[in-house]
Length: 458
Ligand SMILES: Cc1cc2nc3c(=O)[nH]c(=O)nc-3n(C[C@H](O)[C@H](O)[C@H](O)COP(=O)(O)OP(=O)(O)OC[C@H]3O[C@@H](n4cnc5c(N)ncnc54)[C@H](O)[C@@H]3O)c2cc1C
Image (cartoon, protein in one colour):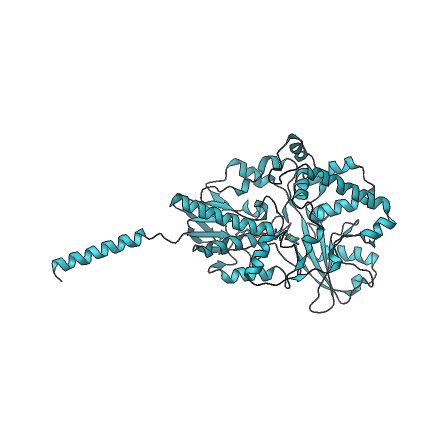
């Protein structure tokens, strides 16, 4: 080759390498956690051309969602993001049957529909109605559920526990037990819950009949949606428990055992108690560290009890049933393999009390109570599936349930990125915490934030 030829070739090479450098590198992100928030964040960013790696500690995806073969989903109006994903993956739901429309009550083993309660226990029904009206009155004072601290009066509600407020209502004992069961089933023990949080959540769902929260079912449960999201993802590692995350000016390094993963950004989509177990360098600011210790999580353990035949005979033991005996919401579930399935929730301090029990001992406690009112329940029992989030180190509780004073200190704290660290998860959603909708929304929000951060550095 002539000297001129070399020069041309060299120039070409230099130009070529300059071109390679000028082309923006594919941005990369690591998503820690393959619950619905992490899956949504990963999916959205991959769609935008990001190189995404999802690291999940468990052998399976879907996180805290779904022990039952099918769960109730809210309407498209109430849970638009969830429905957006269902439509995207052409997943078809089934309409909820009529019997799930209204709650019923199990008082000392006797089941009452709302109408029966009004007829046969009018004082209890009136007290429950009084409670609902009082709560609705407080919710009506909150103009914007995104601004729960807007007035001194509202800030005062944050200092009060729900239990103290119920004391002021002076309810008859049975009504109080049923109302407490309702609150602990959905959130947590009334003594641990801030009144402002109950009011803010009532405001979010105000004017929406309960049926909108249980309008349909996805056959196969939420796992079906989780799998549809996973199918789209290029890199997902299960059994990969993240122990440490180090952030530098150039990017992040995420440690799983001896392996290190490097990326431009990391989205931590794990519940707060699990986040507290991850070593972060640099350490979190003092406010976030305090929040990790303080923020209350509700407890709700769920068991699917399997029976050879329905022990409940002709009793319509299904729907959202609140008992005054500490056994939480119950549903009769489809039993695809025959027999009869009953889903039982134990919540709040009733669940915390059973912390030391193993799964089988916990089931026995429930069977004991059921058998008392429905003789034959124990004899028909054939097996169970259990989901315990309270004692699970990867969860640390069922979901966010702000305690007194916590909204004042930590409102929307986890929506703020810290350098290259971003946070997702139901607990980071200001409107719909404790739901699939909240988890999915938070994943989308974190994905948008990562995009914005990257755009700002380009
Ligand atoms: C009993 C119960 C009943 C519920 N019922 C309903 C309902 O009927 N309707 C509804 O909409 N919602 C319901 N929810 C709420 C809903 O399930 C949750 O809001 C949602 O699943 C939370 O998703 P997430 O992504 O925020 O967290 P998660 O699902 O907890 O996902 C976080 C993931 O991170 C993983 N992880 C944790 N630590 C690490 C680590 N160090 N390294 C790697 N991975 C890690 C976890 O294993 C998990 O998979 C219920 C929840 C419970 C507990």
